[in-house]
Image 1 (cartoon, one colour):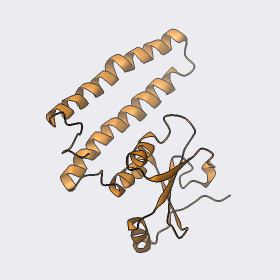
Image 2 (cartoon, rainbow, N blue to C red):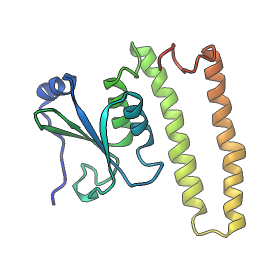
Image 3 (cartoon, rainbow, N blue to C red):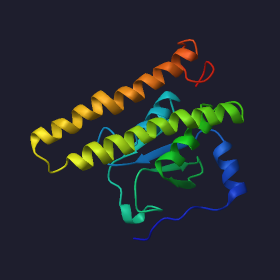
Length: 175
C-alpha cells in the first residue's frame, strides 16, 4: 500500500477541525510509552478517540509512528504525523496550549524539556546504550539515569511548579 501524504486543503481542513463532534485515532505500538502525551491529552479532554495498535509504517507520512487521524462526522479523515506536531495540535484543539504567544512559548519550553528527557535520556541513552550489555552495565546506566539525569529534570521542573505557587500547573492556572 502507498504512503499517506498530508491533505493540503488548508482552508477547508481548518474549518473541519474547528467543527464539533470530531473523533480521533492514535496509531502507535501497543506499549505503555507509545503516544503517551497524545493519549493523555485526549483522555484529559474526554475526546472520542480510539487507540490503533496495528499500523503499517510504510503507509505513514514519514514511515514512523505515532500517527493521529482526525475524523469528521461526514467521514473525512485528516492524518497528522510526528509526536511533537500531534501533541501541540491536540493541546491547541483542547485549549491547553496557552492564551497568548508568551504562554505558548513557555508551554513549549516545558514540553521540550520533558520530550528531550524522554527521547534523549530514556530511549537513546538508557534503552539504546544499555541494550546488549551485561546486567551490571545495565544497572550502571539505570543508576546514572535515576540519580543524575532524572533527578536534574525533576529538580528543575519542581522549581518551576513552585514558582507558579504550586497550583498544579506550569503556566497560569490552566496548563
